[in-house]
Each structure stands twice: as C-alpha cells, then as structure tokens.
Length: 235
Image (cartoon, rainbow, N blue to C red; front, side):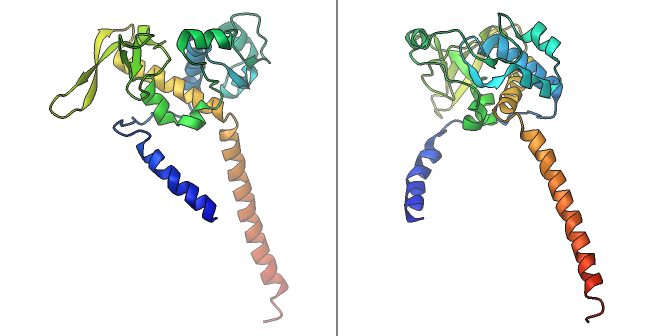
C-alpha cells in the first residue's frame, strides 16, 4: 500500500499538468442515440479508417447500433472485407511512420484512454501551422503528427494569441463545407461512436446490472418475509 501511495503521489503532478492551459469542452454525446452512432460510424470509416485501425472491433458489432448486415455491406465496406472482419487498414506501419513521423495508433479503445471530452475538443482544435511537416497543429495536442483529415468539412482555423493576456483562441479563417454547428455535430457523432467502439457491451452491461439489482431487491424482500414467517412463533 505504501508503494502504491508513493507512486500515486508521483503521478498526481503529471495528471494535474497534462492539460494545463487547455480547457476541454464537454462532448454532447448520447450512447442511446442510434442515429448519432450510425452517422459516427460512417464518418469513422470514411475519414479515420484510412490510417487508423480498430483491430479489436468487428464490422458485425455495428448490428448493436441498429445496422443490418446488408446496410453494413452497402455503406461501410469498400474493398474485399467481410462483415465478420475486424477493422484493419492496409497502410504499412513503416510507411505511415515515414509520412507522419509517428505510426497512427489503433483507435479501438482510444475513447477509454483519452475520454470523450478530450476527443471532442481535439477534433475541433486543429489550426494551420506552416512550421509543422503536415501544415497543421492542434491546440489540445501540441505538435501533433496527425494532419487535419476533416479540414474540408470544418474549414481552416488559425491561432490567435492575445498579447495582453496570453490567451489562445482559434478563429475560422476559411469556411468548410459545413457550418460550425454542423461540424460540431459531426464530431459529436464521431466521438459517440468511438465511445461505443471502446466498450460495445457497456449499455448491455448496464441493463444487465439493473436486472441483477432488481432481482437482488426482490430476493431481499422475500427473505425478509420468510424470516418473519419462520420466527413468528418464537418471539
């Protein structure tokens, strides 16, 4: 226990400074909104799955968000994949590292590692930076290797710094094909899907947990009345 507390004491300062100066926005997601999850899955396959894999997720798990096998094949499979396959990419890791400076991580459990608020803020915080190899930087993840793959939807932001206060702000310099509200909703749908993908059984587990609690509550009630019946002639 002493070793654990000592390690925790060393870790807390790191956690405290992990997002220093960066305010994360709340991700407006709803894990029960199947339409949002389906839109997020489509965005993920079209924009994220080109570089990032999700090797622990199978396409047929999308049945849990209301899609049929036929819909998955028609809208989310673009090569020779099968519905039962995992979400892998053909990009070679060595090539990816050479192009981006780092191998794109697998996104299967990224939402559990980062959190929904971090992902929502990150995907909305890219800005043009000519000093970076890709031409892009990120207010949440400084010197990020990933380019802004959604820039055509969002447009191009630039970073403005208030000389008096030192505060940073992102300003939309060139509009994209979506309005800011539409882009924010697209990102929310994508994050909603990433959260689902990280724990696809979470909603089922919650429902099962409620049933177990209800059963235990009924069992306690029955046990109480049985005890009263067995002991009624003793007192």
